Length: 97
Image 1 (cartoon, rainbow, N blue to C red):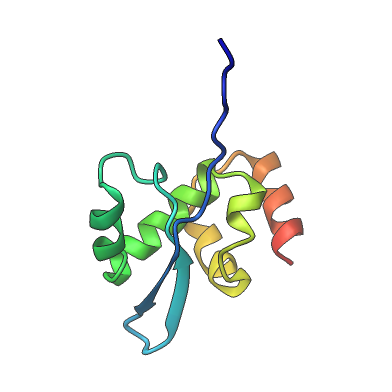
Image 2: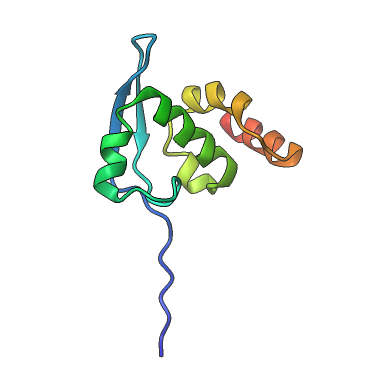
């Protein structure tokens, strides 16, 4: 039997308006938040608090091909809140800069 590996892929982009009035575009990647379906995730990502949590989760566990789909300025803003291993933090700060 042949085994197929499915790699994490973005299923579109959602734009969210933050409390500051700034708009942030984030890719919709199922699996970064555990339980929502794809449609639920799209709806949830319109809330600024969820977008922040989602981005921090991405910084903690997503690979670089997924992270590079986020706006780099937004990743720089969220990395301070992420609980990262020091080596991963240094690597991500280098890649984001």
